[in-house]
Image 1: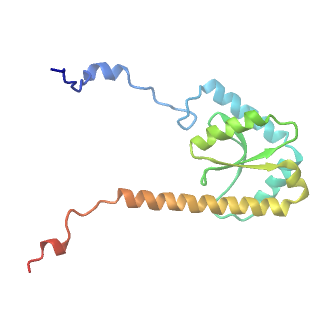
Image 2 (image 1 turned 45 degrees about the vertical axis):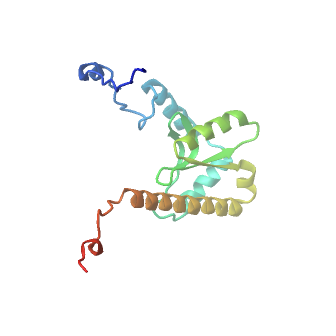
Image 3 (image 1 turned 180 degrees about the vertical axis):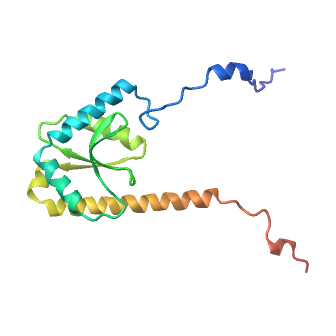
Length: 174
């Protein structure tokens, strides 16, 4: 005869010591305060010494009326610094400069997309040469992201709505 396995519950006094510490900084990301401060300082320095492509796109964003959506320049998101971030949409825009490490960029994009942030990459050359096409591409990306968010909200509401156990027709007498 085989032994049956049973569910073993831990003593509550054991689990009280093993509770994870609250994450007070970094919006829940597991980043030390020292690392987070260094990232914010680096982002501040990047804002002070922006490239021409960053300045041109930031100027267009400042003048545009995008309703409730705003893009913050050189924002810290987790352990990465993105060129432009729209927190409300969960969307980041990265400007690809010449001579940039593509492997690092792809790894950073994967980590951001793993937590639900869509990353859009735009070449700096395109921003400086054809700003209208870039703005049109960003607008299409924003519309796509808005539609995705709306669909996710609709799916969540549909799946979490309480379902009635019976209907009036089930109880009606013939």
